[in-house]
Image 1 (cartoon, rainbow, N blue to C red):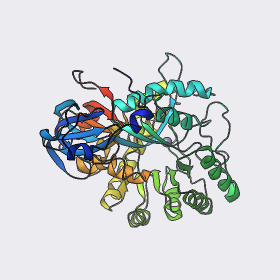
Image 2 (image 1 turned 90 degrees about the vertical axis):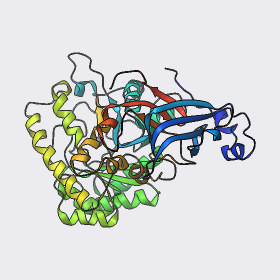
Image 3 (image 1 turned 30 degrees about the vertical axis):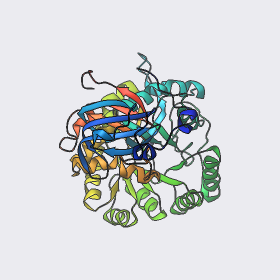
Image 4 (image 1 turned 60 degrees about the vertical axis):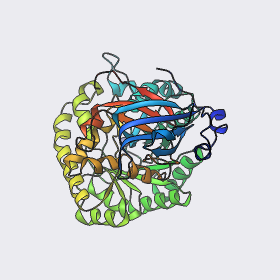
Length: 435
Ligand SMILES: [Zn+2]
């Protein structure tokens, strides 16, 4: 595989496709014509024998007319496959990547990482995320601004990975250790309204795209959901984030934190098991996104020994999952908007889209599930005019899968064959067995 690198020169020297199509089809350098057997565009349309014209990092046009392909364009034949927009995972922790060094529990590996080493190691998880068809992530919590470094390296073409929207430190109260191991700098601790204001402003000053707040206990194998912040503290965080044009995600494992987070005006609620009917109704009314992150609990059950959880974790997580799923089912029925978030961390990268299987179990059609990782997720990012759909003017993020994801969501989970991000091919597994 070649590592593509998008240079500024490429972006600046391109000619508008519309101009070249309107005239007598001049030789088109830097234009790719990607042919799909079927294309789901993210907005509800399915095209047969679709050709997506890509110029530099953007989609210029979609057509079924092969004669519209300009001379000199590179044709990529994916007519055996179904095309989709690049997928979006709105809840990751890319810089908490771990390998499986024998005998060293993953939690131990995370103690006091040197930031440069942490970012360097995260390349593998970033690549696995792309291989799952995920070309954009919202990363919700990192230490020492590793996420900001990683985002910028990816944007500069120095690192291959999904486009990242990052939060820096998530805000948390004293006595809620985000990591149980090690003694990391306490960048996100904030108690009381003035400290909350300072911490939010600090993340924005550091370059955060989005704000994250831990509104309850609960992380890893701890599934307790005690509300940590007061309504006033949440409201202060929300208002300050919004004042600077940033969205805010509030974590709550239980219903109390979720209730106050919704009323405070959070843009998305993460995890949130056992939400009461009034809160669910309020979310539907306000358009608050729900990111249930059901599948990460499954990942913890499958990998708890390697991670280094204390005995008893399986029982706790196994009891939590059905409540998580039931809350998702109720919220979907009530018309709440969903976005797909995996909460991928440690070795979970590459399993990002398994969450979609749970969404179908919660009552969504495969298309509704796909929307949570495309148009809905793009809306939550505030990027609905650039991401989440295959449409003219959008960033050229495309995924080819083998099979029909609109009848079987597992096609997306297991049969990603090819991925383009920003107009560059980043994954090509045609000819490889199913992942
Ligand atoms: Zn998380």
